[in-house]
Image 1 (cartoon, helix red, strand yellow):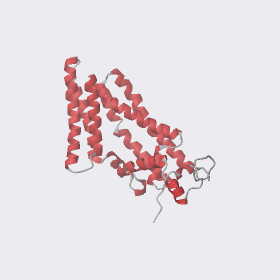
Image 2: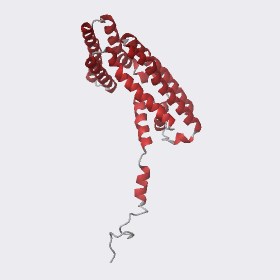
Image 3: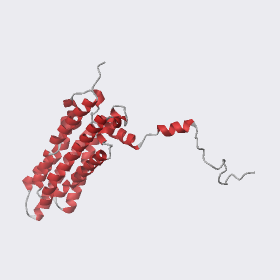
Image 4: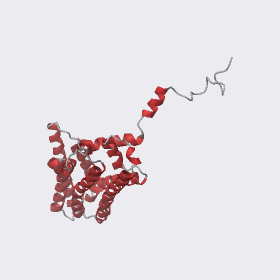
Length: 263
């Protein structure tokens, strides 16, 4: 009578040929790249960036910015902070702390109003809530240090994170743009077999990484100089005015790769 625990006993060894159902299930399991592509593609679709829908470039860029309401929600808190800081600025440290509290309070308060209005109207408030959390975190950090320029640190971290993600993904051959588009167009990662698509997605990801890097290159010297007014102004200029053209270029490049076939 054989010992089932003895090495070499067929009863103790794993089945080298699992049932077909188990093999199919393993093959059907999504890879990490597919799951990431689904997450990125889903976010792009919710933002109105779906090449399969055949919308015009202007419509897509406008949707990506959130229309007039999205623009106001993303720009006005920063404008209010900048104006309040500039108008009430005083070199006296005791007075400056009060100016900082006023400027941050108005900015965060406005972001809170935008969020509350969306919630009351039962509209999607994810972007507004995200903006409110970011504004509150920036205000908390700035109040803790007592330095107005420190309210821009979360933005620096965000640009660093996004820029690094786009750059690394492009350099290792899995550009984030390609993962998102592959999901939206229903081809998964099959685009990697097409040299033209790989090249376009590579350079698009490099372009986005360059945008985030440019923001850091221009804004960090102003941060270390403690020039809050100039830093706030440059941040606004390098925000939507640069984001919108990049969305348009990305959209046009992707549409060129996937031309619509006449029905």
